[in-house]
Amino acid sequence: MFNKSRTDVISWFFVIGVLLLLLEISFNGGGPIFLFIITIGCIYFGRKRYHRTTGKVLFWFGTIGFIFTILNTVAFRFLLFAVLIYVIVRFAQSKQQPSHVKPDFTEKNIDVTEKMIYRRKPLLQNVIFGRQATPDAAYEWDDVNIQCGISDTVIDLSNTVLPKGESVIFARGFIGNIKVLVPYEVEVSISHSVFAGSSEIFDRVEDRLWNQSLLYKTEGYDGASHKVKIFTSMMIGDIGVKRI
Image (cartoon, rainbow, N blue to C red; front, side):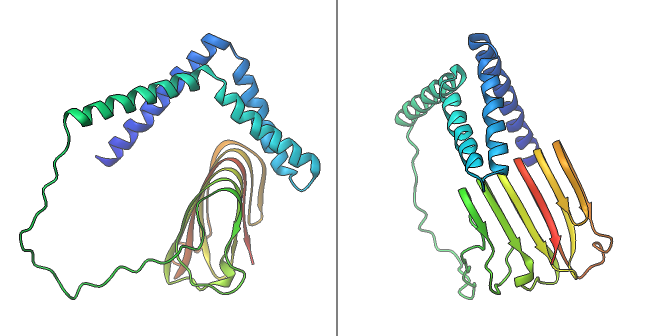
């Protein structure tokens, strides 16, 4: 049921995206689409050369241009108007049919020996802009699940002790680079998806990736006592997995 629901949502997003694209082309032709390609290209090449002044200028020019291009499209205004109408309709319905919540005062059997749930701050946070990395000093391992906007992420596994079994890293981003440093005694499985970028996974380098998915697994992964499974996906950026 969950998979079917998720598929329906993705299908609806795809249909709406196609309709908005056709709407934009019918009003403004291919001009905005060309500007999207130009600004995304500026962001990508500016990010690659961000250590230089020209790279910074190119990156921020592309970012600002991308935002303004979206705001000036007919499709964005139409979508904003549709969201506003939806909010007004939902608000009107809630006024006509308010929900009633009744507290339940019946006695229930409570297990007084139930343990408290301990929540600690995760190693890495969701970020929109910037760079983040695992601590330089020794740290306690916890599985990673993050989403990034325009940022670089470095995950160094040499400063922690991985538990027995399979550890997991989920990292999803829009624009940026992801680097994972893995000790030699740890086996690795990698699933990577990218629209435009490059990859350097151990001794295998691919400079140009266009809308591709990559799958790698070290030879002794299945029978290893310590192993890490890495899932990464991004719109534009590079993935690097190295031994340390």
